[in-house]
Length: 350
Ligand SMILES: *Cc1c(COP(=O)(O)O)cnc(C)c1O
Image (cartoon, rainbow, N blue to C red; front, side, top):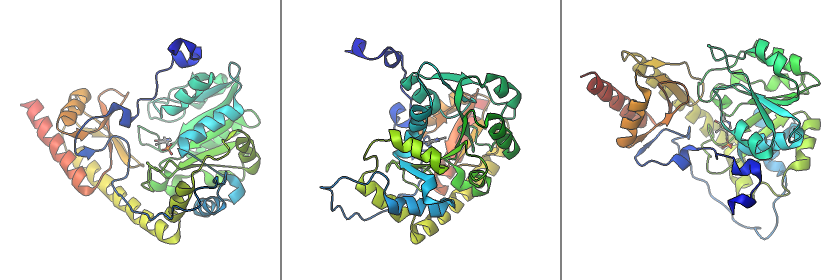
């Protein structure tokens, strides 16, 4: 049957999500999930009726949280669907291209490839910042430029003045898509205030990380109304199931937001703890991280990753040599991981 599939699809290697890679253990720090398992009550009624394409209560709640107008918000099945909608709406397969800057999130490439849209890459600089001089001559046919900040997997923020330069450079030519999946951990770094100045800016957000709802599948695209209207042309008629809208709205209610802010501050504290403790270990480099994860370099990253895996501590290996990405879990999970790393490195050294 595979031969019947489109050539693009035959050639495709699916995204190796943390969930697909699997593993077994009791410390899961490989998918940047939240350790907080919040409970919700569901009404589970009126399920005989279709959901609204863009449930107004949810849109209004997120608009208010993000500080934008409801007309500037689109909700979708996770930020991942937002990525796909943008490519489908703005890129002509076989003609247009997207541009992104590795090392970064893998789904921009996969969605473009699935849709048959060319991918151009301009690697980040040695400081993991935008290489604007190399981006500029590579913008031919580019309709979307994806920029992830805090960047996954490196954890750093992209310089604001470079984002502004990129928005100027691409004015009337391409859309800059800021992937702010982790911005709730450092809201002061958001580019949301630039929306009023730049009609070519789109921002991706998600409930999966800071709001502890990865399993819910709920994300948002923020942009000016005209851009949102284009996306509404290509979105499925009923993208948001009724229970998803209800739970996401509860998470964004006054009480929900208070809880989220407390959990975010706990995770930021845990990150600072893990960072300080790891840094004190010889031959370990911890890169400054602004999301709920840290990128850590060991003298032999693969060996450390595998040893942790075998011990039931599931981390994420990264495309960056000897680097392992560690999600920030509960304090107990952080301590367990830290102690394991200390023990293991002492053992390697012996
Ligand atoms: C997790 C993640 C997403 C996807 O979020 P979902 O809303 O769960 O689809 C998008 N971008 C980045 C950088 C991520 O790490």
